[in-house]
Length: 217
Length: 173
Image (cartoon, rainbow over all chains, first blue to last red; front, side, top):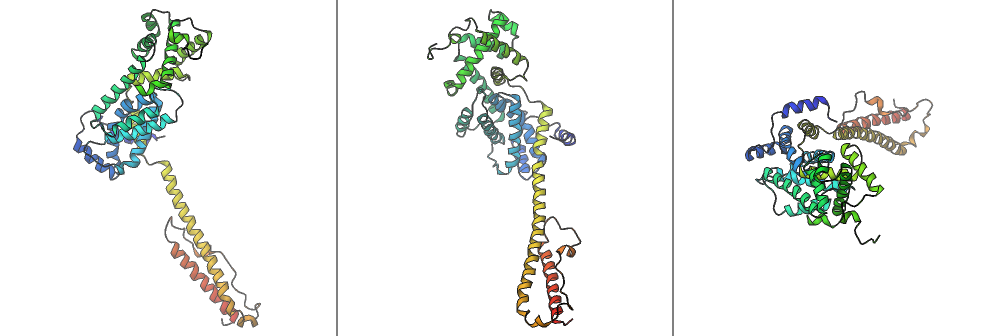
């Protein structure tokens, strides 16, 4: 684990560096990449700080479905970027598409090692990566918006494949984040009955995701 | 039940629950309230929530992750140390093997001249005793480099020993 001294030094050094979403100039990014490739760790740190929040929120968290897994994946992505930045070739669209691809490959490895059913499986992400070889997302913000929309669409498509009442239970309790009691009231059942309804809804969703439903989203 | 027909809960969400379903529903409720509890349905529920409304990454944690990625890896330091230690050990090994080779060569080269000195009484001129090379090196070995110089020093010392022994046997000292 990082020593407090090192963490403090880096926190100070990186303080004030905003996310890339706040309009990073492509030329200054190119210069930062040049420096990073020459071994300038401050420049590389600035790039990681700029991309990390988007990678975590839009790419890793939805696909891995767990904050702990997404944090592990982000750490692994950073390790690979640090190791391979020398191999990166500037193509005029910034570093983000490359870093995102690294993150997706990390996510694929993690999903392959997982036994629990989540919304994405490794083959879903691999197919997504293959499709993007032809149309790579260039702008970080557009790419993030597209990723987040794809995640919401994936949820919506999955809910369409299960019984409407189950979909409604999931919608109200999980997506609208209503309390158990309020969700029960909306679905016109007792809280205890709502527990059963939600259990059945998630079982149906898991069964759907484990089966044919995955690739049709 | 016909295995091809769906369970009644899939066709009638409000069908009366079994005891097993009641137990599983209670477990799900507890797992949703306590993330430390292992439960597949609760994990899927969280995945659905995070896909629909992903949470931002904590800034302090993120900076720590960046710093961790940029800090020299402990494994790399260990490897470098290991490489240096290995190089030093290799140097010692090379020196030891070389000194043995020089000694062996000395024995071989000694054979042709053995006959003339056979008449010399060994008791009066004892040969130099075999000894380790440690005495030749007072300074610590460098982490890397210097192997050739050390081998040269050993070879030179052993050649000198060989000459002394030959002179002793020939009784020309």
